[in-house]
Length: 120
Image (cartoon, rainbow, N blue to C red):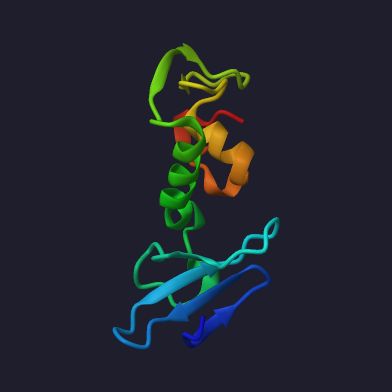
């Protein structure tokens, strides 16, 4: 990865494509020795890592990884097993999508705790 670094943190970098100038977030997975996960940042005009919406930025990656393990991400009829969560479980899981993302990738990447849907 030889793109210029705009800002670096412990496990993340904000990099700039030398061709088009677009910003990308490079996240280096802690648990595996692998190339970085590259994502377009949300909001798109972010220039500092502190302004990054991590849940929106990493969502496509999280969904793709879960789909690799579960197949199609489809809701079932049973409720999520998390206490006070009224969302429906995904097929092949005991949890709804948001709690599954929280469990596998960290709560900061799930869309939990927003307004009336606050579940934890």
